[in-house]
Amino acid sequence: MPDTVPDLCMTQARVWRVWNALLGEKDNFAADREVAARLLVHSPDIGDLARTSHSFSQRACEYLALQAIDQFIDCNPCTPFANPTHEIVQKVNKDARVLYVSGDPIELAHAQALLNPDYRTHGVDADIFNISDLYERTDAADFLDWSRPIALILAGPLPLAPGTAADAAAIMQAHVAQLCPGSYTAVTHWLQPSTGPTRQTSSLIEVELLSEFGAGIFCTREEIKALFPDQVLVDPGLVQCDDWPTRTGDRKRNWVEKCSVGAVGRKH
Image 1 (cartoon, rainbow, N blue to C red):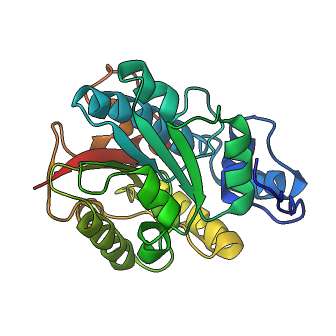
Image 2 (cartoon, rainbow, N blue to C red):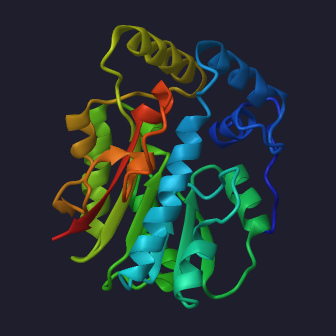
Image 3 (cartoon, helix red, strand yellow):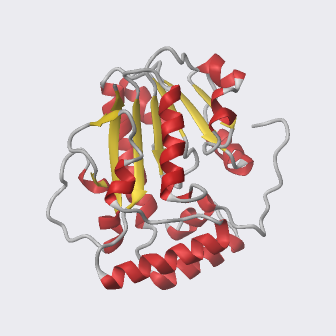
């Protein structure tokens, strides 16, 4: 745990705790449950945005570890699920290192409390949407070797990046510029629905998130593809999260599952 534990801010909703509440978990407060309740009014399946994203992240991290990647940056450290990134990749390579990054000190403190501290895991308080905040940190530089390939995992945060879809693409351009050739990014996002009723529902969810957190958007397929600059997408490319790396079957999916998409890109 850090030397000083931040104020829990129980009266202020936090994004990660809202997802926690939506999925019926217990690491949340009344303020988070109030936001979750408003989102559930628009769609009882809204929590699947978090579930499918995390499931994608697990499969992507295992795949990348099998590609001999042994350095990971996870920009969504505190999800309401078992099997965090370091457990996934260290089953493949016991010496794989995972740097957890969050600009929310409460989230980071919670995540660090769940870690088994050793030389293979580390957490830093940095704003992933402010590139220099992470890459100029000496403790991050001491923990990772920037001259070797790194897997950057952004499974969840980008729909809540400040600004427009173009701003999110610029953020990813800056991230990728810091990584050496042979590095990977694993990204999930929310695909804008194409049909009228679900398009209206997604717009109402955007209004709720923008009101509470100042960000939260669904994007077009082309806008999401722009999040992989200077990269080649690993097969099967940009697909529904549940279909990466292979289609899981013909089970009927709700609109949220269809809108949760992801891809893995490799830097030239």
